[in-house]
Length: 391
Image (cartoon, rainbow, N blue to C red; front, side, top):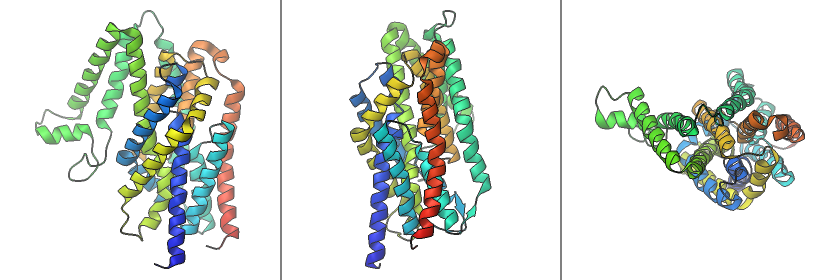
């Protein structure tokens, strides 16, 4: 390989690692445990440590779908050159760094998606309307669905006629059923991805062991354990449920967000056969882990304290829809912002109990403006950079 081309490959790899670090320090590292920190269930530094571990695990075993979508599904007819990849990652990481510095959650998915589309179209690629409609639908519905579910759950949990020793186990059972059907790398036949439901069916080979049976068994087991734990220690049980949900959301964040750092590299890896996609996912996961440990505490504190005054119940109400939406996005291969997911859920759960006084209207308006502006700015920067740079 020509030394100059090799140098560009190395620069692209370093840019991807930096992007992964920024993701860990920002959206992926901050949002999963922000509700738990806001509920005083865990310290900021311990939350950053745990989210890094689970984010790395999610990146390795669930990162392929979104990586594929970002790398090859946003623009048709072209493959991003090395210079284009560097531009995409530089824009995304730069805008995210601004968000971390200012304390406002810039949406990573918006910046990377905008820059990929801008660069790709500037290079002569063709738009992919079906994928844009899918992504836009998820982005637009996330605040409505996530905030609405969080509002509904937070409205029910404090009610005297719905004891939390029953309501919280039901929510945990729902999460367990979904988790049983989530696909993980190497859990399928051979080296393919698969779910616990599929693995159980292959292991037993009984006709009666179907998706409904396995999902129901997992849900019942999880629900019974959570019911027993809350019944014997309500405060401690709620705290453990909250931390478990935060860990699952952190895992989901890694599976989704690593694609924003690694995805742009996939067209380059097609020409470098000695670097498998799994190696890229591991590298991206390590970048997220280090970012979570070193840069996430500032954003965790910002999200936990500024958006809503949360207790354990409202935090659980925020994290359940966050997990469900995150896993749907991973399944669809849609790059989604965890800032948008969790912040919307925090606002919904806070408004259910405290009304408008429980959330900061100014913070919400600034955040929504940052989300919309980050996509438009990333698109314009990506399109404009290709117009002036040699490719």
